[in-house]
Image (tube, rainbow, N blue to C red; front, side):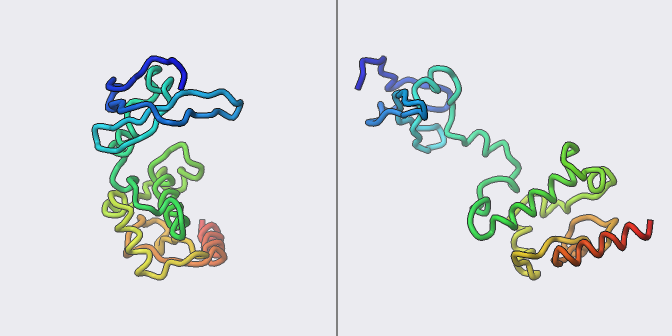
Length: 174
């Protein structure tokens, strides 16, 4: 190990440096930086590059970001794995209704379509409803009444082809 200042015992935000890690971080360009094993106030142990600590870029293990998210967006394991697609459908539904920068917002949130509070507050509630009501890969969420909200009594799972046919039929009515 090189003769760098030892950060052990120092605090950087919520991170307390325990000791220098045995291995340095090796950047893609080949330069190396010392790493430190830190304990976060939340109890997690993380390894952090020293210059990220001293530069103020790393002040917690990521728990602050997680805590600031609504419960529906907190870790549930579905952002990867076999239910990744369902989580993506959920995120897209939320964004269409509440994020004015999302494409097609004008067709959803912009015209008053919302997501029921129990789904919006907790992805797991939405996931349970989806799995109990016929969701499988290849299906998409559909609002039965096009002017209604995303809620259990107004949603169903249909194929993309059925959804396209329904969309064109709605446009012909206008």
